[in-house]
Length: 228
Ligand SMILES: NC(=O)c1ccc[n+]([C@@H]2O[C@H](COP(=O)([O-])OP(=O)(O)OC[C@H]3O[C@@H](n4cnc5c(N)ncnc54)[C@H](OP(=O)(O)O)[C@@H]3O)[C@@H](O)[C@H]2O)c1
Image (cartoon, rainbow, N blue to C red; front, side, top):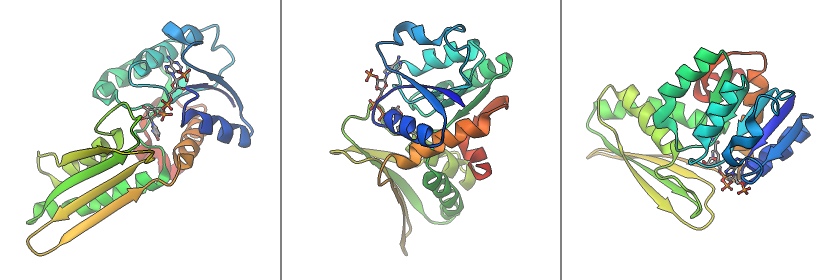
């Protein structure tokens, strides 16, 4: 595929490596070349099959809007914009493009969401719970998009209209650790996902771009990762 990658930071640089290993042609654009979405005009995207975004919460919505208006399929890993998800779904559907997003593209975290969904049954009994997330000190958003996704699946699965509290820590160079702790008078359940590197995020994002080829529609990676 001909891929355009936005962001050559910690995750983007790994996405570029993995995409090249998987024999895709990948062009990478950073903040300077893409000021005001200059790299995302219809003409400049003419020979691009899909755009992958690992940039920052402050520019991601403008990137999405430009790519969708140019009719391009998109894979978005950048977090911090999910409050706008309904507006973006409408935009994607009205332009007939394909779009996959995730707060976390690693298969392990998506499996972890299933585990959390099952464990949410505890909240229908005498358990209370909390979510803890730890990331490196450079992370721009808190709580993490992954913690918010865990909170959402637990709320939906337990059938109560209450969110578990999320406690965020920013420490050193931690790649990403998420814990769910459920506690009753009798015992305590610990669930933990600890990312050892950014490899899983990058691999999932490239596979999502491959999966999206020739498709239209707005997809949460949680609903499609089993098909990869
Ligand atoms: N979904 C997932 O699986 C997943 C996994 C990891 C991270 N993330 C999220 O992905 C995002 C990036 O994380 P990161 O750790 O890679 O961040 P990072 O190391 O800070 O990299 C961000 C990159 O974005 C570039 N950038 C900023 N504005 C841009 C623009 N308008 N156009 C193109 N590039 C632009 C920067 O370019 P310059 O270097 O040129 O300034 C920088 O290379 C964050 O929101 C993070 O939470 C998601």
